[in-house]
Image 1 (cartoon, helix red, strand yellow):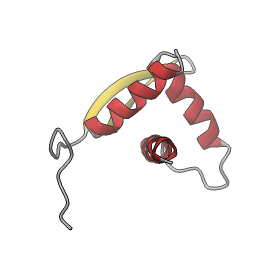
Image 2 (cartoon, rainbow, N blue to C red; image 1 turned 60 degrees about the vertical axis):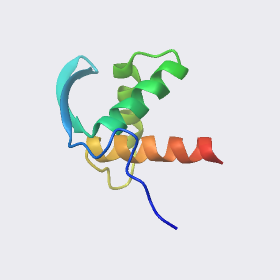
Image 3 (cartoon, rainbow, N blue to C red; image 1 turned 120 degrees about the vertical axis):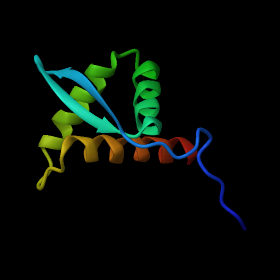
Image 4 (cartoon, one colour; image 1 turned 90 degrees about the vertical axis):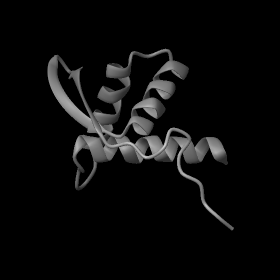
Length: 85
């Protein structure tokens, strides 16, 4: 069995500025994760910044909170896996 590259190929991270809880922060993610988050926000009828803020609030509650970019990647992958189930 062989594997294929992602549909858009392998692409490095992209930095974006986003406002969370009234302050601007920069987040660096690969384009495939940005698209996954944008799609999830659209399904929920939320602005991307609102979805990121919700994930950030959940992240902070963790016993050992990861950085925001890691939390966003983990959430997006989990969301994709749930859709595949």
